[in-house]
Amino acid sequence: MRRLFDSLVPQVTTDIEIVVRDDSTNRETEDLIAEYTKRTPIRYSHLERGGLDQAIITLTKEARGTFVWWLGNEAVNEGGVAGILAVLKKEPDLDFLYVNSNGETGEMSIRSTESRFLQDRNEVIVTFADLLGFISATIFKREFALSGLHSAEQYIGTAWVNLYLVLHILSQSTKIFFLAQPCFSSDPKPPNQSTWYDPFEVFAINYVHIVRAFNGKFSAHALHGMIGKTFSSVWRSILVYRAKRYENSFGSSAANVRALFPLYWMFPGFWVAFPFLLMPRPLLRVLYRIYKTLYPRTSQRFR
Image (tube, rainbow, N blue to C red; front, top):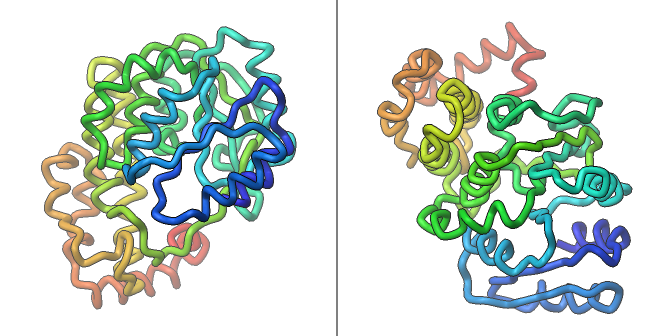
């Protein structure tokens, strides 16, 4: 969190508010915020432990501005806030803004240098697909989110309340913009790092239920493509993590790949993936070594 505030606070202007919800069991965040409140106003609350989903709902309710930008633990790039404000001031009737980002190597999440308006909500989910769940990449009119907060509560515990609200907002949006300037940066997590959530459950199961809650609000083709793109990443991650003997994240032995059948049987890629997902790990390791030998460049993406 220090990384975030070190990068954000120097860029804050008088028309920006910072709201922090802390549900940790220690005083680390509270003490950290106390340092920054000497430099800029911060509305801080320490509430009962509720997790990310509850935090998203609470922060959206407590925000007072016209636009809301959720921020995770990323660093805001120099000039990132100014770039966003420039767009919002030029286009005050904007409904939704998707901002680009980069990793530690400088590679952008969306490989485009052209900022542009998107035609409609369907183009948004086709263009950004699995990246729409990236919390720090979305900025939106708060009034559009408020009408969806009550229904979003049923998804607390899925780790996707933010995605539900984004899709709810987009279903009402008519003026949508993509800012190609990378406004924040994030570091990749070690592939075998333990997480507070089960990635298999979150990305392979919960994600589908969230997206399908919007049947009829977007074109069937766009929603189908959104789910298919995410599943493509998920099943490849499962294979590689298991082949590399990882026991956490997508490599967990607890992952029930048979649970994928009722969700993905209509996707051609599922029938390619399913035999490999059931394959014993020793055989997967052999096939993965062969794959890396035959296709060294391609395999770099799935390390």
